[in-house]
Each structure stands twice: as structure tokens, then as C-alpha cells.
Image 1 (cartoon, rainbow, N blue to C red):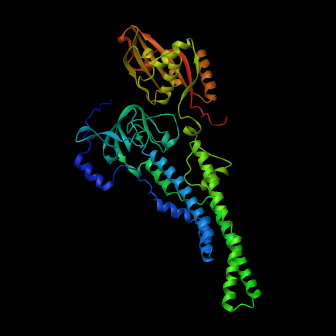
Image 2: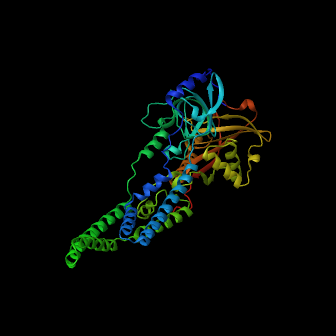
Image 3: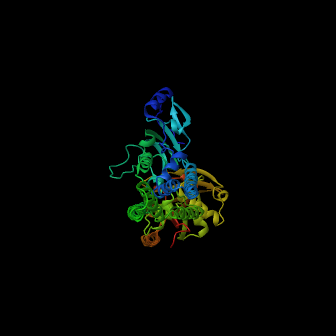
Length: 486
């Protein structure tokens, strides 16, 4: 764990409580929950359901309670289907929330403490390490070999290597390398971070707020059904007027009051015949069937009309990482250079962290295990020291005492590793040509190298001072999901 060269005092507990009263808790505000009554009223407000209710009222007026009761049964059934479908979806979505870490280590009252992440306030100094989900935005005070997975914000599966404040050169990039963001995951190293933004003020919180504030537009189906209802109402109104007039003049032998009543009843009867009362029922049943089929394929439908909208999609634009790919790196190809496959795999494993969080290191270790190299076999020796990864060198290494031999296992960017390997210019050209070929295949290429030293006194202080033997190259990819069409 990182030890600061100067003691960090952090906030006092009393000041943190006072500050929390002013700035609030470190949570992303959830959208206001819609109650069961609200869902019912939202469903009834649709034109088609209003049509059924109006039809039921008119049937009551006409003295046809059976027909009116049938209309109301249809309304209740349809409302139940929609409300139950939305309730099940909301229940599932609520179970998927809470992406932040529940607790975080901070410095309070000059001591390390573990607090709930919701209690973080600006000015806190939080301590992050491998496997921690960062709960707030902040500036990196000190760090050691820190790599963060920011795919939740940027969509990129590759880890971002961080640096302390003041070491970053001028850049126009929105995402800073000396800054940590809420919702991201530490996959390597550790750091002290000064909290600057919490809750909805974080980058993650801004996304949540913007999504919640997005206007809810009517779907094409809702627009079309609304148009149909208006047309049906206009036609029914026209027939009502015409029938009323014709009936009034066809019964001159009736008294005036009876002529008016008979004309109105005749007009209403014909108007009702032009209204398609079955349409809302059929529409809801078919949409529910579509939502049920999507649910079987693990797709959630929050509003039934969106089923029709999804069916009308001709072009779907999505982010690659984690959507059409697995967001999980895997070794796709290895290429040896003056080395055997077994030696390459063993050195590759020894160059990884014993507890890997980095997606590429996980992929490498998994590949070793699949090919007969267990973790016990790879890490059976004693780890003497390590060469930390830096953004400038783009390589790292571990020094092991294994089977009474001191082995330096290194991996990194091919250009960096090749420069410290004992190979000719011709061989260097061959290696870089192979790197280019693998890169054109969509792979991320990592070079693997090693050397042996006689004793611990012969271990170089810096990795770039070593003279290594190049073992080969490893090509990694983020594979597409099985359901994605090739």
C-alpha cells in the first residue's frame, strides 16, 4: 500500500458532519417513484382507453348496462396488464441500481477510517486500491502504479494509467489523468485522492441527471392511435349529426320532445357502431406478448408502446465495449521469438500481478491456466521486487527467485520492450512487422521478455537498464458477444 511521504491529516469528523448538512449526502438522486394510482391514471389517459370509458358511459345512458359492463371489464383487464408489466420492470430496475461502493477508506481526524461512501464530503481524502469502486470525483494527491477502468464513463475497456496532480502536461482531453471519477473501478495500484465533487455534481451523476431529465416523447404507435381516435370521433360525430337530422324529419307524428329524444338516441347508436371498441384490447394483448417474448431474451420493456417502436427500428447505433463485445479481454494469438510456447506462457504469467484486476492481466493468466500453467506453478517462487508500470516507459516487470534462479519477467508495449532486448536491427524489424500484422487484425499487442541474473546484487534498479531476451508477442482482443451477427 502506498505510504505518503508527508502525513495527510484530512478533515475532522465534526467539520465533515457540518459540511454534509450544507452539501448533502454523496448519492445520485433517484427519479420520483410513480405510485400504483399514478400508473393507472397514466394508462387511462391514453386516447384508446378514454374511448372505451366514454363508450361504457354512453351505453349506460342508452340503458344497456350489460354492454357497458363489458366495456369496463375490458378497461380493467387492459389497465391490469399494463400496470403489472410496468411494476415488474421497475422492480427489476431497482434491483440493478447502486453502482457505488458501500464503504470507502478515508483519513479523518488524522487517522484511517472506513465510512459509508454516502458520507463522503468535498475535502475528504479517500484511499483507493485494487478492486475499489470509486465513489466520488477527486484529484490524485499521490499514487503508486494506479490504473483505473473508466469504461462506465468512456466505454473503453482499456485501463487508464493515472498520475499525481501536477505531473500532467497541457492537454485538451476532457478526461484527466490526474483525476479519478465516481463509478470507475481501480484495477491496479493505490492512491490518495482529494474529493472535490460528490453526488449529482460528479461526471457519473451528471449523466444520471441528464437521463432523468430527458423529455418523454410519445412513441409512433401512441401518435398513430391518437390520430385514429380523432378520426373515429370525427366520423362518429358526423354520423351522429346526420342521423339526428334524418330521424327527426322521419318521425313527424311524434311530439317535439319525443322526436328530439328519439333522434339523439338513434344518432348515438349509429355513432357507437363506428367506434372500434375491440382495438384497444387487441393492441394491448399483442404488445404484452411482445414484451413477454423480449423478457425471455433478458430485455426489459418499461412501457408497452415501446415494443412497437423497437420493431420499427431499421438502424441501431450502439457503443462497442460491453454492448457488442464482452468487455472482457482474452488472448487471441501468441507469437514466439527464439523461445518455446511454454517458456513464453510461464514468463507472461510471472510478469502479471499475483492478484490481477487489470483485464489484460486476467486474460493472460486465464490463458496460462487453460494451457496447463496453474497459478501455483507460475507464482511458486519468491517475488523479490517489481518494476512498476509508468506511462512514459509503457512496460513493467517482476523479479522472481524461482527454483534457485533469479528471473526478471517483463511485459509492455512492443516498441519499449524491443528497445531493451538484445536483438539485431534485422530481427527488430521482423518483430515490429509482426506487431503491425497482429494490430491490423484488431488485436492489442503486448511483448514478453525475460533475463536471468546471478544474484540479487545483479538486479538492475530500473527496468530500462536490463538487457532482456525477447520471448515473443501476445495478441489480445475484446471478443464480440455470441449473439452479435458476424
